[in-house]
Amino acid sequence: APILTLLGANPQIIEAGNDYVELGATSTDNVDTSRVINIDISNLSTSTLGTSTVIYSVTDSSLNTASTTRTVTIQDTIAPSAPTSTPTGGTYNTAQNVTLAISDDATEVRTFYTLDGNVPTSASLEYTGTPIMIDGENGASTTLKAISIDEGNNPSPITIEVYIFDKAGPAAPTADITFGFFNVAQNITLTLAGDADTTFYTLDNTDPTSSSISYAGGT
Image (tube, rainbow, N blue to C red; front, side):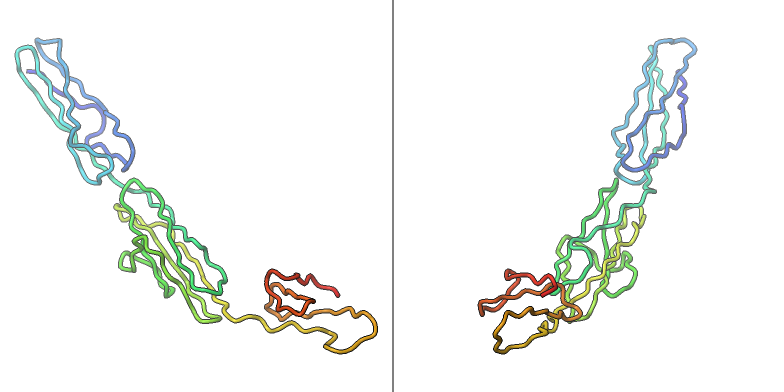
């Protein structure tokens, strides 16, 4: 009867998502020199964590058979990338609907988040694709922390985004020359409030908007 000998490691360890590389086997027989080794990998999936069995079999010309197996272990030791948020943290004057983009991974990835400053874990709120509404009173801030965890229980780095809400407009700008009657042209300088970003003005008695003339300083 033939004798089968496996080549390479048994068990064979493969990182999830990597291709299976057949390590091979040899067979010997005291009489028959013409043999073909059959290798059955039908139960093997490199995207499913756990163990699978590869079956080797050989039959000689006298119909004597031999078989053996190799255990293949699929493991996931590589952590996913951190989720990314859109929009990112910053200063806003309205509520924000935040979405999280989750990185590709060899195995299933789940993402969890907190809005109270605590470190997210698999027991935190799970992100399912529905936008996260983040809002706050004027001057308040909310910290979003998010983490992705793959099927191998590998955690990603934690994403931290801070959303600050500025819902009150700045104080009105002031002019160094106020309303009055003049017999010569006047050069007027505007002083902006401390938190003002841009100031606009008109000279035709209409109310200024962000489409009006932008004040760039000077007179």
